Image (cartoon, rainbow, N blue to C red; front, side, top):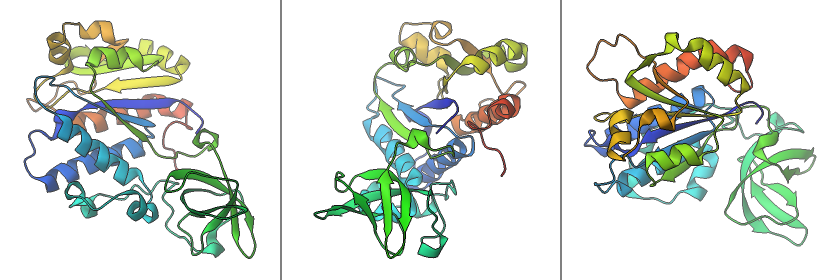
Length: 293
């Protein structure tokens, strides 16, 4: 995928105040949708309360985010039946380019990209499920039961594909999910980002730093936006780790000034922040943000 690599970091405790798995699933689904709407390439789920055991929440969030990002025709092959996915049916569809609505051969074209999974091997190559009426043929070997991205190269009596790197695709092709158990300070410094933005209601208003941010945004290729937790903001999380938030980010911004509620939930801050950045900077980098066709 061309354009900027936009990553977001969200805390595991975003679901701590949501007791039922159904509501947790719904909340995570809204985050996955927001990420796809604004062409996020990576979602980092980090542990924000080291004293508490957040492993279950970390894995639940990551599992559901990966599930919603996976094309529907591959989910049964890639995900086992487990309690965590009990309410996966309520997750909203992404409707991104890599989630095609049809698998009919007549609707395929040479040059189309598809997500697939290698299901078996032959003497000549590998059989790949790409969600079409008939499996596709890939010359060469591929790791069985592993997801891969392919390009359709031949359409005749059968479909033939070749494996490609997702970075070669000009359209938005979904996000990756990673889990970080390291302190926030290490995460911020280890992502090799050209621009790191932290969000907080106690920070500089976005409009007061807009020009400086615009200059940095235009030059950056890898951007990381960090969000705090429902009950603890980033300043508090950083302080508990023995560091200063201003030392971890290039900009610490309030993207929801004059808020009418005591707190802004993480999923709400995520939508508000990405929408503003899309409005301010999206027109100069349409390969990185959504633009109607």
